[in-house]
Image (cartoon, rainbow, N blue to C red; front, side, top):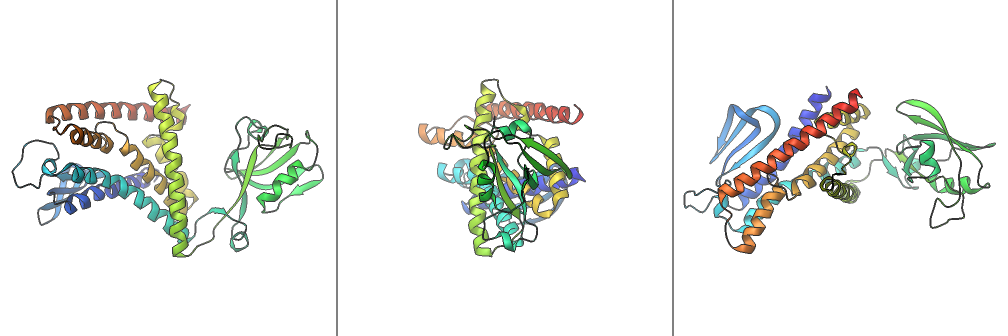
Length: 365
């Protein structure tokens, strides 16, 4: 079931990406010869509208758009080949797939907010939530909380300190609760993690929070999570905020990974291939439709940003070629572009094999 859901999610995201290329190519006057669901060999021709053939193919891992002249070879002089269009039009077509994935993420997140999906709530929303719960939202690295084993996502049933118990759905009240006694007083968290209840104790100490070095602290932040549907207008605003936050966080993580990759210090535990993604999709599906929609939005953002990387065989690499041609005012020879793209594609395949192997090792290790 996990594999089936993964295939559906990936096909949907790749088709959305290719739809962006398709719409932009049509809008800029390029000829689109084929829009395919799945990858060849062709299973059947669904229909033909105008000059474009719509096909269903045997390999169910995405889709593709075949734009006339995108290989850079000489074509009929009707001005409708990709290679005949100006650099701006070419760039628009290449960026359109990335933009469509980001737009799709925004739509998914906004729709899930309007329908109602678990999210962090502000104080004014807590009373309206039918399933509000207190969860750990952040753990400071190297803090007493991190050393004790508290992790983001743990649901907090209650917090016990001596003869005091904290159960309020009020994260702001937790800070004074921790700091109300002298440093060294142990604090026990009654948690639910992966469906099982557990107790974890930590001892606050000073110096954990740089802005307030004298205050005893654990280095943990709490948030109230619950389901409160919002109006369509507010869903779009919140959706845009959440999407931007995901984009920023993903871009930062991707930049750090690429930097570490080129210095041979990459941590493969921070990335996942198809096996790891399948596990995450299965977990999200078990958590509910809202969780699956949210994960799909996150994967859509990842797909967009990865495609923006200026590596041959990706949209970002092809966009780099267009920029170079615009600056030099000379076309890159097709055989050179094809050779560089082939090398880039081979490197991507090698990286995928390594990451997938690491995913499998984590499962059996």
